[in-house]
Image 1: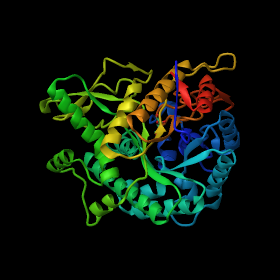
Image 2: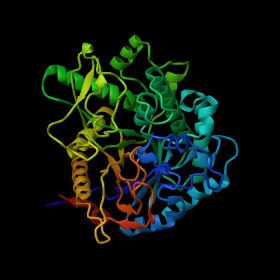
Image 3: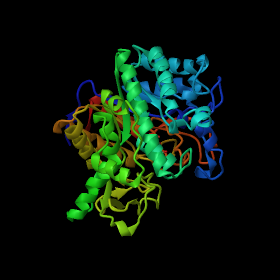
Length: 475
Ligand code: GCO
């Protein structure tokens, strides 16, 4: 075993999202988000679990930050709930809600932990959804920009790393294509419009950040699964190119170049579902330059040719990997998803592919030449408490292999600013409740949301502590 060290300022971090950890869903003037309502529709989430209390981070943030500090964590990525700042999306600032994040940021800084602030992790105010359809209307551009500006002003000089939108590709696919996240629709045309609007939002806030001469960096976080061809059959190679264009470049090209990939855009035009460009859109998209690209990497994806007459339909642009859903999906005439025979899979059927994160960094570096911040990577599993301990060697194995692959990618020439594991504490998995755990820190709570919420560091917590101390992992 040899120890390969990372750059000296490498940000060893970990991540969470407001709805998944905070709880306190209606405290201190917080407004209602689309998720607060969605979880109340019977059958939408695993055993109807919700984030009303979540892991109560809202009240226990000091204890959580203390654990981070003891571990030596260098960065903590969290998201702000828009509804705490503007309960109805705009108007007067709800000072009590804002104060929570001021306190959290101060607490992190006092412990030498770099805050990484995500502006949007899926919990849009219900009021904006009701008023104009939320992401379906261009009215969101002004409201989002106003919300972002408020946070930029509040945290100027304190927060140096900002994530604009988290996993635009996932929240839009789940919300407007697959109908498994709010607003629960399956409308391809709307899906592309919503994405175009989200792109305009992203560009607008990045420009605002730069115009305000903020001392820091901003970029979106993209859920990137590199696409592989099943084999060297030329048709399958073409299918992988198609999938990479349709599922990855369709977002990343817009973020970095301000343009949609041509082949896919033309195809959408033929189908009559291409997003509408209004005057100024093209210029706006081209004018915004992210300072880094956030990457959430969990798995790769393997595809084969999908003849038009096959008809395996749209609707699963990407995959949650829920068991049984990952087999047949794709787009007729472009690609279909197949099982990769060379990799193992988790209990939720997600491919375990550490080499894939290296492939991801390589592809991004050669196509975009942009610094990368890994904003998520981790393993969702069932964990067991034995004698008050959690021996999650499977998680250590997963994470250490990914850390090594990232180190290789840095040697390959990728600029990687840091690595945030998903997640810090266990938290609510949107659709899988509290049984699917990702954290370094176990939270005592069963799948029916009963438990003391006591925190117990897992074996992986101590493993990461050692990695941070040594500034690298032995592998
Ligand atoms: C889950 C998912 C999430 C996401 C995260 C995306 O199980 O619900 O894995 O936790 O990874 O919210 O940014």
